[in-house]
Image (cartoon, rainbow, N blue to C red):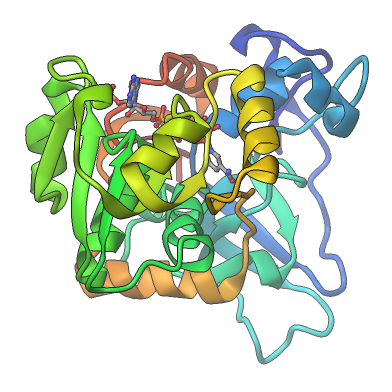
Length: 317
Ligand SMILES: NC(=O)c1ccc[n+]([C@@H]2O[C@H](COP(=O)([O-])OP(=O)(O)OC[C@H]3O[C@@H](n4cnc5c(N)ncnc54)[C@H](OP(=O)(O)O)[C@@H]3O)[C@@H](O)[C@H]2O)c1
């Protein structure tokens, strides 16, 4: 089978499409034929071994796992021992398996990081949900404790995480203020935002609104910004390591409630995303779909961090 393999850290050129052994079925796992992926900032962080401190987890001098990729959607090829009755050969599933590396034709995944796709859903669409959708959902609900009657300010509202967060918060009945560039203002409104702050027209520093929750996906808000803008905050991304360390320190010293978290894949939350998609409440906006053979270009595309929605990858069938 074909797989993207990386033997060293670096730019997208370190990814090579190679012929590797096809995995067999593993007990307690699903052998999946991958039909679509989406790409996320986590992929290029692992690929580049950046920030350097993350190499403690990824591998000090070279990547510990030569396979890259988190999001996938595909078809169950074989059901591992112990999972009979839970899944069937031919089931369409989607999920997140960063530690496995999903940019390949076949993967073995644990059922705890997957869920069934809604009937008739497209593989490419469902592959856009796992990392970005789980992060949006867990940021708003698990960590942000957002309530239907509340207001939420979403910074970075047009990106992968942000555009799904706007839709989820809107579907919950919350009032959304979206922060994005002016070119994406109408896009954010079309997703359900009731107010848009275009940061390149009116700096967020001059926004006087107070919100119940502030969800920062872009990562340029400091402790004082969270305090000024809302009653509680959730930090999802960071523009620099220094910003992350400063926020983590100040939130420990200060009293303003701010959660910093890493999204965890689980079937219950994936089921919630699938159900919202089936009910037409959640839809990924796909800026571009690349072919599997072009996957390094898909990663180069998102490294600019200006994607409207998601970038997907389709495998040939
Ligand atoms: N904690 C976790 O578990 C977790 C999970 C997933 C992602 N993340 C992190 O979350 C961040 C976002 O991920 P993503 O997939 O959504 O990235 P993305 O798709 O590249 O989106 C980034 C967004 O940031 C916006 N942006 C750029 N400059 C901005 C500014 N000055 N103010 C406000 N928004 C600005 C861009 O919108 P415009 O083009 O309109 O400016 C873009 O849509 C990344 O740092 C990623 O590593 C964390």
